[in-house]
Length: 147
Image 1 (cartoon, rainbow, N blue to C red):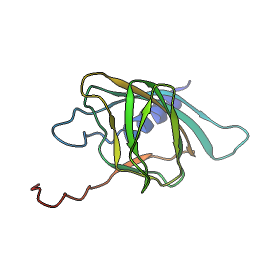
Image 2: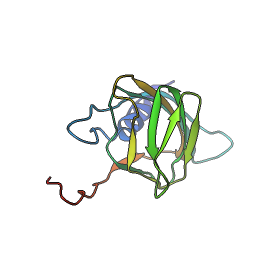
Image 3: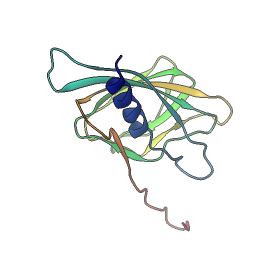
Image 4: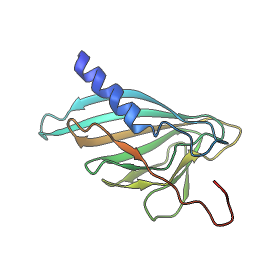
């Protein structure tokens, strides 16, 4: 892997991580770049992979994905609670997977356990040169709660 690829992969991992926990009470996830390569037979597309480690009770901030990013998520260990777009909130266990279509909103992405860590592999196909795979989004404050 050359220096520009390493830099792009690192930037993609940082962009993939919402960089903040879902709330002050939840520890943040840790995103580690694993792989990045342009797809030779699909000009303009790059395949990337990141490992997302969730500490016990850890979470990602609500975010949306790039308009070009198709994501396949695979739970390596533990249990991950996830909600994509307006779908149901689901718990996925080690060995289970799901996908997120381009431009998905991801309001829930967290460790389903308060006592055990969890680990996720996210494989992303996106436009080559995409600088931000995720963008944090504001969550509405539930009625009766103060900010």
